Image 1 (tube, rainbow, N blue to C red):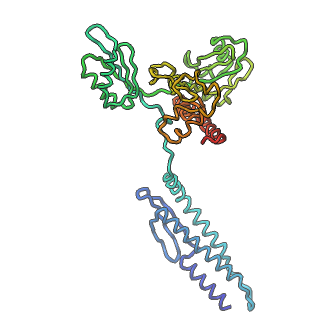
Image 2: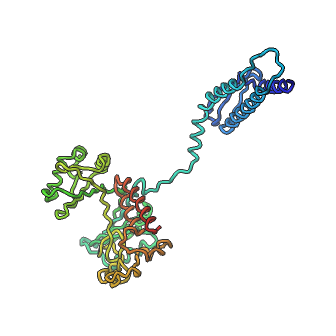
Image 3: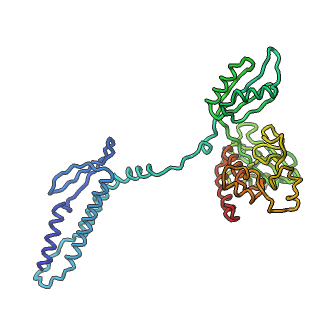
Length: 420
């Protein structure tokens, strides 16, 4: 009996200290110092005004929870004690319900004030994935045009002139350049490089110089169509059928050339059409289907990767002015030897131990260089090919979903073949 009375007295003292039955919180946000003004109202302690930061407020709530847990444990101990000698039964207060009710009131009033800002602060501190410039927009184009003129007559730019121009821009990096007749066109990465080169050529009287900077424009999407009906025999008829049966293409075509058939194979009955980014999105929402006559035709994004069969690099065709090795011996796509691919003896005899990718062999990355003997230069899993294809997708409007699918599919295929 004495133990029970002592326990009850101890519990009443603890409850009296914070006056749990009348504890109330009032919260107000102070935007200046990013703190929460909390007013604690208690019949015993009066009104207390305190400034709590968000972490401090969580400590207050934790202290309340700790006390409540201890009070509940004490209540269970007291109520669980057998009272052998009791003349009259007196109902004891349900401390468990009292504490639960008060704790709910505190949390219901305080947490809605704290949690939104607290969660915002936590999310703001999380590391964010940085998007490269290629993922958001294309870089600006900085072009310098240089014309050679002597008096009233125009003279073509000679090899000596070309060498002199390169010498003038020796300290100024050039992205690429082309020469045609009496005009040389230089492309630069930054506007500052363009201005420096313009100043150099303007100081020489024999050149007429003009420059321009313009935002990069993404390519229009292209779609492949297969199994075209046999009665369609040319581009004009196919375009007419497409515009006749597809409201998506008709309603979106503000210009005459908004939809264009860029390729038609009468034998294979396949075609490639060019559309706008808005049309591509509408077709995607239509499950990538278009109508020709009474049939549905599934379309896929057409990503055409150009590879030079002289040097095996990407982005230009054989004997192009952009081929850096057009004056050198050809490179074989099968064994990377200095001979034409059609003359490769290893290819004709299918000697797989002689396979070697010329692009990976000269790569600066050790992982690519080490994998050069696992595939040919024409392999569609070659890192150089994958990079080129992804680059084209980045430069094509409305191709984000296809790019993500391609990257994921390539990783899965490499993992399945053990070429990670």
